[in-house]
Image 1 (cartoon, helix red, strand yellow):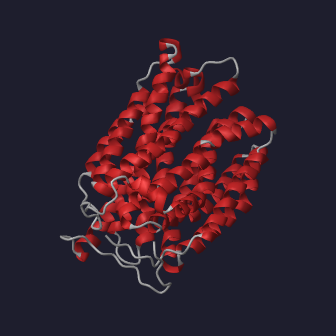
Image 2 (cartoon, helix red, strand yellow):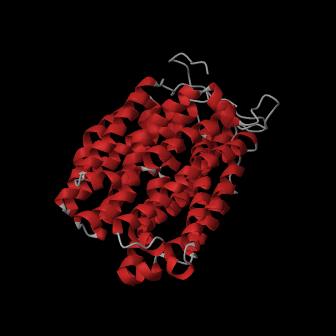
Length: 443
């Protein structure tokens, strides 16, 4: 893809039938609808991640060894990430050839069906080996859904954005992962406290999954009320029939660097909101509520930084903001996870808050940065593939890698060295990629 001179102005070219005024008026509604969708999708994912840390191991993978049960539960967590590339291929094709909005509606519906299904599953005690088989199957369906969600949500918001505000509008759905986690915590914590640990382990863990029904209905209604992207046009003969294959053959370098750019942040996010919720209580004796509160406060702080970071990225460029976040994560990774050794709620909460604010500097501009790396006909597939594969490698396997690391070295410091190393790799990839703030965004 040819690069533009650094002084080129960002240009949005609307498709026939769309006017600049209508696109600008629609932009806030589309961004809000995209945020609702990503929040629901990541609520579903966060509910499973928290449940896997708390109860799913013994319920579906009974074992005399608690570590083995936890590893099995985290393996099903990782299984969904393995299915995400299939979602990229499926929904990338739909999004690049049929339309962004249609792909997003289907992905949300698929996620809702899978999440509610998990809430209705029998446990191993009731159904034997069929229970974990069904659990893994529904997790794979969740993974396929997530493979198409992120790219479509940020792309729909970005392609509706007025000139010079693309990072701002694309960052709004990027707050969805943290909002989804906060929403899941807002459901899980009261349920855990009201039902008690024994009842939660026995049956109340199903409540957060079943509540997804209400959220999905709301999300589907919101998504069907917004317009298609003004930059999407029906495919012509020149449109790739299989966008993922075209992406891999024509833009492999950008895809690899894009994956690397989001790799470290993915590890920080999933180790904080998934793995540490299990590791802190089981290995270090930290109360469960302390870990959930620390992660929730940190997630809220990250949301607060998301929009300011995006506005700054629209003014000075994507790379300076993201590089700053990457350096901060490299430096702060070890102190953040070392805070777990203190066992002090205030220390852990403070460390997580700083860490997730630094993560927001990396992840807020990436919502505009990744789509800008690829041409229009491959934009949905390219952005989705880069982000989702980074999530799979850096996030999906992070709990498994962390569990193994802590079985070899019984100290939370290894979590800091692991994530710090991945954030350093992200820094190097960002350094190798061009600035995209002034890249043309055309149909």
